[in-house]
Image (cartoon, rainbow, N blue to C red):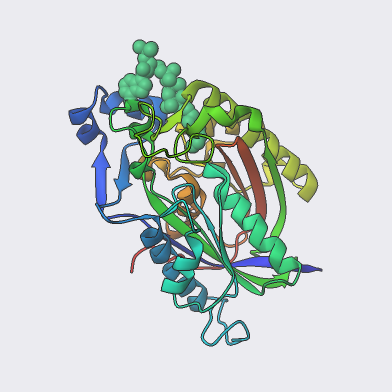
Length: 349
Ligand code: UT7
């Protein structure tokens, strides 16, 4: 057995406002039938005016910390600072509160975590897996003992109001896990990662303006360039290929076969993508976790929110062999493997 990062808490948060397909159809040239059959999505949540990514991140973080206190994650070591629950915060987001500074330090401050190291990871829909790998590596290296890893995004704040495709898919939310130092043989230990990127596809998922490439000049950006843009068809194909291949590489490394898996928790972008990944890996439907019908594509929050829902509903139980797999802008992809621990997710205050 060797030192490993172990999942010991899980939380999720959604904004109060739900938007149904019918409500979207009242504003845009779309229909409940199109959205359901082409994506599987029935509902998504959006932040209120004035509400931002950090607000959701704080709510999910609080709940993950509460979950860790309830079962198996009690903590009395305060070496990282008086009263600190964790000594590291990693926040995956592509919709930070501001372009500069990172959003994580403010989240750590609002959570009362003292002066812990806190930083953002930007890997769009793969952000949570990248953040998990970063925090887990810092724990196994002895740089941290306990980490709060949050995935939070508010894509409703960057969507083009007249783009029926992206508005049908994306929703806001946050999910978080607590990691603690433990042993590789324990349930909850992160057993391995597979991470990758292909920057030749950077234009497929993008916000063109607002960075150093298309600088702010004081003039408004070129038509629509301030909004999120996605080329759905090629992204669909790349998502299926890369989540399948990444999962398979990781399974080979961990020594599991697809048949050994109880659950695959893939990034929730489109139910047709989930089924295509299942087909590539030779999985049965019962092995694939689906919650996008209720929340849409919540970007970096997608995987932890799917974990929270599956665990809360008893679809994911202690001892299950689980692979998490994500794909997103960059392009980026990543997978993680673990045996599900005995934890109680907290999704409502
Ligand atoms: O989270 C990061 C990764 N993102 C993804 O994985 C998303 C991957 N892509 C997808 O999920 C799908 O490509 C979409 C859901 C985005 C689009 O579905 P599609 O089946 O690939 O549709 P399409 O883009 O090929 O468009 C087919 C038609 C088009 O109309 P025409 O040109 O055939 O007349 C679109 O304009 O569907 C139209 N369309 C819509 N119609 C009604 C696109 N969006 C909508 C809509 N309502 N909301």
